[in-house]
Length: 209
Image (cartoon, rainbow, N blue to C red; front, top):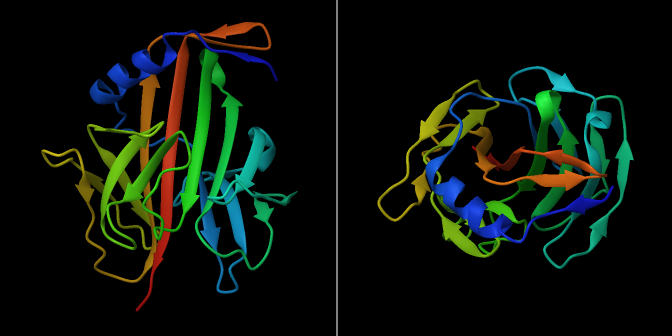
């Protein structure tokens, strides 16, 4: 897959990030971990329908040090290694309907406070409940962050004056934070231009009893 990005891509994206986010839930990619540390990736919605992992392209799972993790495709998920330690990240893309180009950037774990994905929600302190949104090393403010949980509890977080969002975790379970932004400008993939380009970042973590 060959991708051509205009020189104004970064500045255009930054402007749109401040102004645009999406309240309606849409498909995203997220990561889960089991008790042994094995990670899996899913496509769809945490509390909704799940899509086949073949609907995304060029998935890559890796750790903060850049080490790639093995990926195995199953019917409804991607299996990522086994007994993985530290926060895990996965990036992928999808050429969607109506000419939409989606970039997915998922992270599991909140122990690391430095962003690695291009677009990432990171805690302001290790394992904390206050998060900032980072785009290519720069803190930006989303107009809202969507929250889903394994218990069906859903919230929309609004940023404080400093751009951070704070999430209460009143019960044990899996928490998922999601933010989507649309950029200004176009991206060309394999010779086809896409005017509607969206980045979606998710962060998942487990809250124990």
